Length: 405
Image 1 (cartoon, rainbow, N blue to C red):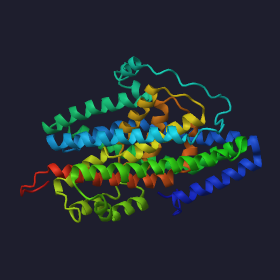
Image 2: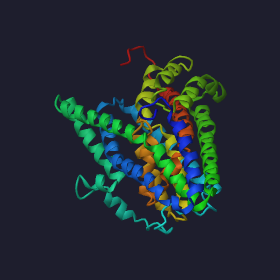
Image 3: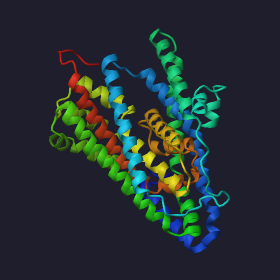
């Protein structure tokens, strides 16, 4: 990603924004607080894009996906188990380490930290069935949007198979591309948001927050390590009956590619060639897990966002109930599955996760200051998930000689 009108990488702009923001905070002191509104503007833009982007992405995926029934069900089960493990690792580590505890930061001087509203199961289920089609988009109710997208996607898929609905399908695809383009423009404003929020934080509370951000990075990194090298190794050893050491030696190239590119979708050609080449996975399993399953293999995004949300809760002294924590994890999983492959998808999904847990979105630009690094670790984890799921799925593959389309 490059900043507008130049070839300077985004991460360079982010580092510059952090440095300039810290300098402005030191120079202006509490007077730097209004600069935080720059971050609020970008957050509002991201929030406005979030739910429509998820809707178009899921609908488009359902119309185009080709899921063989039995293998497709196995794929979904494996991905669901991986998601539960990632959420468990995230919640456990964030609770034990508590990277946001012990720091008092007021990101919005007009609002004091308070308890999150009590979570109501009946109300949450009721929100899945909105009063109007537009309601979930206006209120950013991601679970209702996902349900609506699934219904519309399946109905449109049926129409397309029957020979009608092709134009609507094309409009959905074009809408998805349009929103992705707008998201790209908003991403170029991220350094400005980081500058404003860092200036506000440093000017009002000093540098204490940055030590907590370091703990956040360490916590997420340890969690991703456990997910990849402990959990995936267990899957490979017990179900796929593969030697994990041999497996990870073989997949070094796609993992390093994901680290450098910061995108599992950009790594897809390398992932496929590794699966069908050195790993000797059948083309059907490789394409099912890597091309279609990549929409669900987002353990890296989910683990990071659950830890990040709990970090924000600790930072703002907000008590989350068990139900709210589960809702937050579910929102993270569904949102990540919805917009897999979207550039800088973490910016969108994290805003939805914080909203679902009733946490302040004003902290989002602060998290974006470390998102460039963690984004690469998330991408590598997602690629490791694609490779692992394809290898596990291949145990049940039909190896009879036939063409694969």
